[in-house]
Image (cartoon, rainbow, N blue to C red; front, side, top):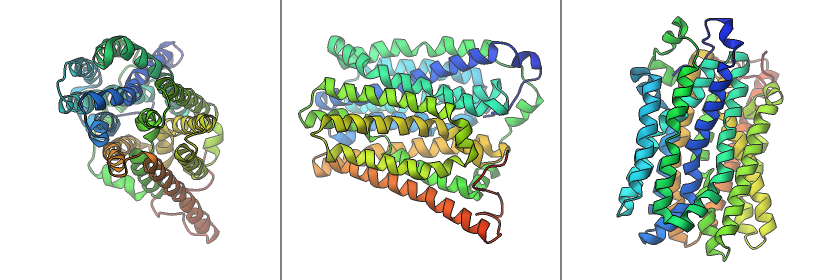
Amino acid sequence: MAMPPYRTTDHYDRSYKPYVVFVCSTLIIFIIIMPSSLLGIIYVEIMREFQSSASEAALMQSLFRGISFGGGAFGGVVIRWAGEFPCMMVGSIVGCLCFGAAAFAENLITVVLLIGVGAGSAFVFPLLLSFTNIGHAFPASTASKFMSFITMGGGLAMIVTPYITNLLIGHFGWRGAFLMFSGFFFHLVPLGVAVKLNFPPADEKRDESKKFQCSDQTTVFKYGGFVVISMQMVLYGMFGYVEPWFLPDYLLSKGYTKDDAALLLTIIGVASLVGRVLAGLLDPFFRRTKIIYHWSYMFVVVALGHAAFPFFVSVYPVLVVASVVFGLQFGLFISQMSPITYQTLPWNLYPTGIATVFTLYGGFAVVGGYICGYICDVTGKYDYVFYVSSLASMVCGFGSILLYAVDKARHKDGDSPLDKTIEISVITKP
């Protein structure tokens, strides 16, 4: 998995082709994020049809999100071995077929295996390649900005998917919805072909970047900032996505309608899109100070947003505000995963670092979905799920605050900051 500037001629930089890659990568993100929203709604229908517990049904969406995001390290190895275009094609087609086959499943285990494991494993490749494609197509000076902007596709998906899913379920049931989405996901194939046709020419530097050293996997953890980011990804992966996962069923249990739940999910999607746009527009501001330091206060705001749902569940306007807060922070955090890793590690370790970040985030999302569902099964309500998510966000914020305090103390004492292996200063070097 390689990402730095790979153009061999200035002619490619001045052509329209990098922007074709950008648009296609944005649409790929749009399609890959759609299941995260639709599964939160179909989850309710599946739980009722198969009479399953919340923790069992939650495996479908947590496995999908966990594997599709968390398979970065495995996906990178396969891409180096098989090539980018074959992985894009095979992953897209297999993912579509898994959604189509799930429409005919006769039990929950089959649905979980097809959607969570099958489609999740297949969509690792389009998701990962959408980011690496930007690194190929744009120079290092602008790649970070475009990596943030392509996540707007995910924000758009979170806006339109809830209403589309409700509409399809109303007309065709959840099985028909799976079939319809399966056909739509097939658009990944022509998008992959379009990227291939507009890709920059290969050069020696790109070939060298495919070489992987096992020592890189341990070296990234010698950097203090990356250790903190890893801790945050573990907690954020487990408890940071509870609203799209459980909010529909939670609101229905409190007497709200499906339309009320769909409206909040759409608000989350709109706010998420705004957050992703802000991440790109405010990139110069975030680059003046380490992004990880900004996460200190951002996670505190997130914690308050999580806690607002159970505290003010009977006050719908407050739920709207809490949905806006969640959507904004989710858009910012997702958009900043790649830049914050880029900012924390040397360039030669960046591919390993971003794969590790995705693996930690996605891998613990699998565990988190089950844990949150289990909390609901034990307590009989979702309130404590939101409280735990709030506490986890506070811990994440404290990690950034601690990093900032230690860094300032080291500078004041004239010592090298944090680790002897890297300088993590309050103000980044140009």
